[in-house]
Image (cartoon, rainbow, N blue to C red; front, side, top):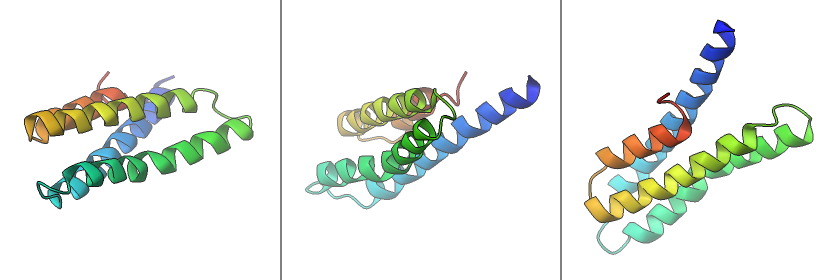
Length: 105
């Protein structure tokens, strides 16, 4: 049971780190005129691999809950984008993304 909890926490931390890294990469390169297109593009880059892996996991009969984890990551990423657009700060967006991906339990 302990190993399963560690594995779940590792996966959530990996998803959160990926999302935060992509968000920082795109947000740091954005200007006032390109912030919205870059953040929309970053959503696709951040959620695309996890959506693909979740769909393959569903087809293979593996983890049935991978689609739910991906959904909450996508919702958290949209909230993080909204927080960046409203506050112009990355700190609240990082917290929202970390909480939505499940790394904060």
